[in-house]
Length: 111
Image 1 (cartoon, rainbow, N blue to C red):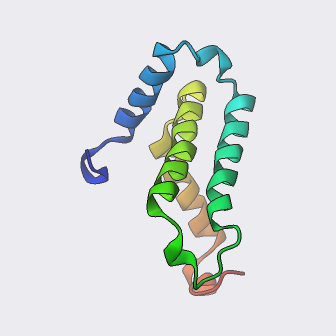
Image 2: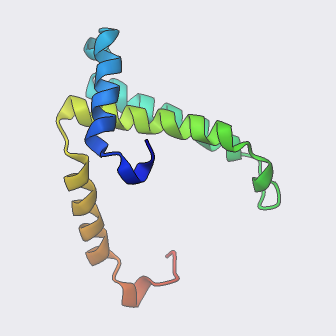
């Protein structure tokens, strides 16, 4: 199922089922999940740690896909545990960022 046809809730349900089948819910506290997100994000960063701009093409996309998936899975698990609607949360955050970083002041700038 590609991104264009998959709903976020389908992914949340997939992850919830995986966790429930293994009886892992008892380990999925906010603290543990937030730490797992950070750990998996660090593993993703590690792939790029010593690469300069000329080396980026040599980083295996399958490894990036794997580590990025780990981060997303833990994010979905945290959303499930805290009953966060990801769509509402992302839309609200983008609206907030749009006010914080108006186009006329920030377009093409990173500071």
